[in-house]
Image (cartoon, rainbow, N blue to C red; front, side):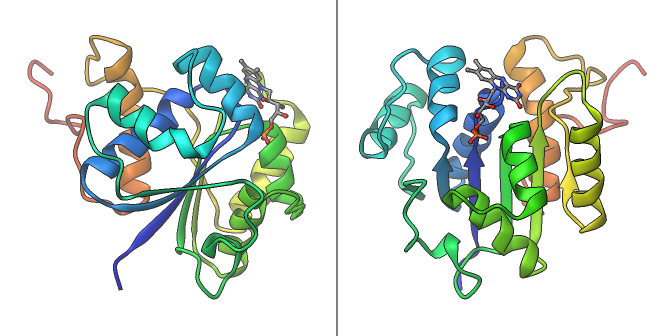
Length: 204
Ligand SMILES: Cc1cc2nc3c(=O)[nH]c(=O)nc-3n(C[C@H](O)[C@H](O)[C@H](O)COP(=O)(O)O)c2cc1C
């Protein structure tokens, strides 16, 4: 069976990370179930593109024309589509990324709230002992945030903060974004290289 991935985009700052990850996975024709929270659409319109579609029907065409590539391997799932495969351990992909991950979603996942599909999908990956990768974005972090992160980390969830690195000498924002996306791809065990690895730089 072909491997699939779940990507949840939530309403934290840094939706560029999620969109770039989606773009790279689609470029490589990897199967992705993409679910976006309502708040993520607000952030997508604020930070990514003012006309980002409010409904999934237009998402594929919009992204295809913006990024000049196909998004045919992506299934855009409504956040209340409880019949989607990502809602059940019997069918869900075993690898899920929440990128960016708001503190609201982080707290919902830590407490098992499952009030929307993206929260439920994460709950499913935890209960099935799959590979859940969260990309939280907040500063500073409160004790509540840190407690939730510790709780999730102890459950085996990968906490991968949206914290770009500079040692690859990024020249623009896209390069910085890729330093985070590369780490996510590595944790997903997807063999794609966007950024020079440690030790590959000239002039060390
Ligand atoms: C432009 C914008 C930026 C935001 N940035 C963050 C952020 O960095 N981290 C965060 O936890 N919440 C952030 N929020 C607030 C969340 O969107 C809000 O808590 C929302 O309820 C999260 O819902 P969700 O987790 O279902 O997407 C931001 C909101 C907006 C409009």
